[in-house]
Length: 69
View (tube, rainbow, N blue to C red):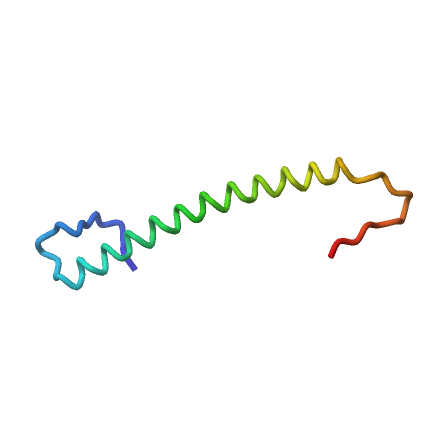
């Protein structure tokens, strides 16, 4: 696991293998960050659609439910 050291693929003290692994790790971190942002957008949209659906559904008598497939 990497500690808080600031390392760069341009660091001449790193082996080619270490540089390649660092670039791969940075790519994966960036992709995870993008996926997390997309997930936040989708969760917000889901909450909005759920609220709109709830408001559009008829009011049911006590104890009755609507089942969705």
